[in-house]
Amino acid sequence: MIEVEVKGYGNDEVFEKVRKNFKLIRKEYHEDTYYQHPCRDFSKTDEALRIRVRRFNGHFEAFLTYKGPKIDPRSKTREEIEVPIEDPDAHARILESLGFREVLTVEKVREKYYVEKGITLTLDEVEGLGKFVEIEAITDDKSKVPELVEKLREILLELGVTRFERRSYLELLLEKGD
Image 1 (cartoon, rainbow, N blue to C red):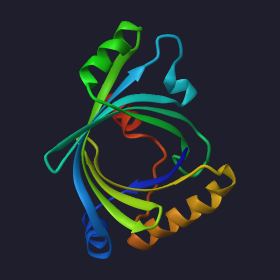
Image 2 (image 1 turned 60 degrees about the horizontal axis):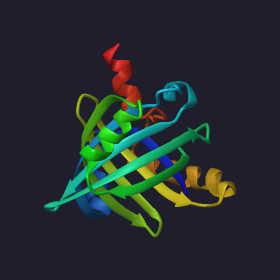
Image 3 (image 1 turned 60 degrees about the vertical axis):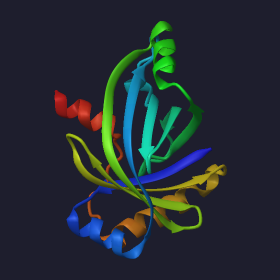
Image 4 (image 1 turned 90 degrees about the vertical axis):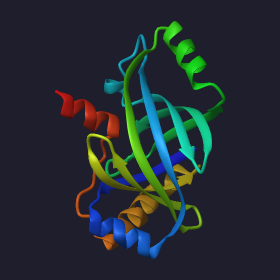
């Protein structure tokens, strides 16, 4: 599965346009804990491994996610493999027992919106970073990536997003901490 994702910086005006023009799916609270491979530097290979804990409407979900290197120069598009897990603490202990090291936990409040079939948009308020807008589509066909990236960028531009960002929240927080 290829996650085609475009992210930009948000503000109150952009957030209001989204809330006015799209249907809210749900509000979620995310805790994303990222891990470093014991023999490979993910910051150099542009990969990521995380455990995401997601809470919404009184529910709890957790996922182990691998994200491959970005495959498009204008977006955050990459292969993503995600599996549900029942016990994130046990999975964290397994990773740490295998030599993986916890890097950082990113916390955010996310509002998820339906744009059209196959496209969702999120308003993210990331602790320590501020407001962002992410829009994504999923495809199995790599040849469709440029067309999808252009479509997603156009939607964000129409909403008033003027600054785009390819770095992950993890990268931004690590750079800010330097």
